[in-house]
Image (cartoon, rainbow, N blue to C red; front, side, top):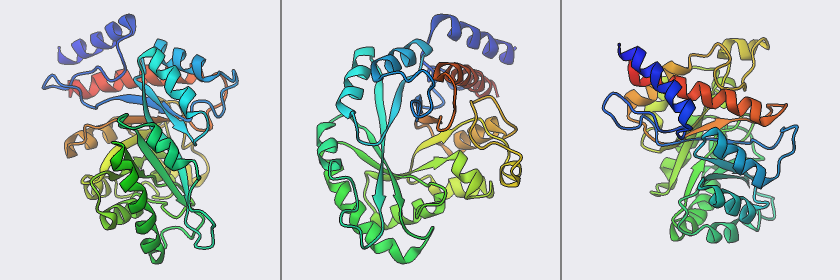
Length: 295
């Protein structure tokens, strides 16, 4: 009966257009805070402008979006505000090469100040050095600590973003640096696709347990298992609901560990009309949320 009611909830949500995060757990409160996509415009065959993107996200029932790089931030914010949606994150890079003239885009500080009080998370992709090289930790701590001060003044959060092939490549790297920075507004993000490749899909629960004191965001997407991805026979980024990876198992683990924060949807590299894969993914998210609430 409980499963039947949960599935009936999925149908009702689809008809009424209830936001993606509005699914209750067995105690009657949302399992996760919100659900939003990012990297939605990099491969969209329709080349939607930011206004069109915001309207599409509203129609599909997403809670907002993540923004890639520092271009057009005011326009992104205005178009989201017009639809009652939230700007969850902005992704930027940190150049860890000691010879670099500047470690980050000179526009970064002004962008941060322009978002005062918006509670936006800045995802830091830290690159240009050998992956996981701990000898660079002092430089990272210096850079992140400086940015954290500006972020705190403006009600913002910095998240260390593990990215395959970069200096912070694994969730363990992000946790190590966040621990050394030791600022309340510096955390980490767990990214399923990069854990499948860089982390080889190993030690999921222990890694998440270690990350929990710093875990502020999680990204998911449809994917095959790490073994398939690493063998070249699997795909590491697909629309949600596709692939052989046990997505429900990941969500159960997050719930068990007490994570209730936002869930981001990784869309990088998904071609065709973005509306097609975003529609599939939000429908899959609602079904997963209902199943999670039913178990």
